[in-house]
Length: 155
Image 1 (cartoon, rainbow, N blue to C red):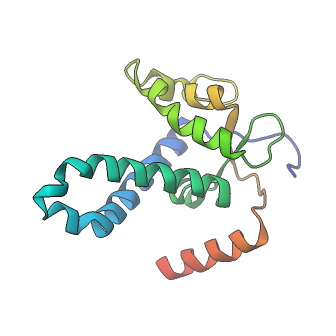
Image 2: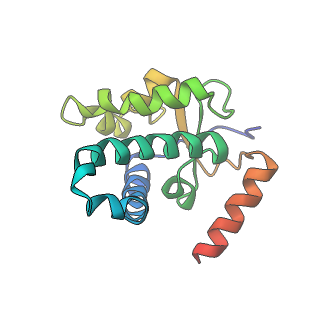
């Protein structure tokens, strides 16, 4: 449950989180799909595998931990815009697919975060989501334990 007024994560914090996620996901994709790169038969599947893996992983992280590693490292959580509760599976998939809408008009949907009152990009508006900063919302207990263990191993 959210205590007090929500503090929405702004453009630069979210851009930093996206940069961190890009680095983390690129390294993971390289480790997991590295063997595919050396097999010419699978080159055509590489983009599909990478993008599919990124989508599944991102949606799962939003549902399980309320954010991707970059967002969590910068104190952000992705939640429903009305209830400030975790996204539904439908919302999470819609939010990911709506990134295309945010990208198409020269990335305007992402830049919109800088001007919007609730710091929502087009993808957030479509999926009815917001990104909060230092909200202190709790993912389920098992998720919190897993994330803490993961972050401790990274350090």
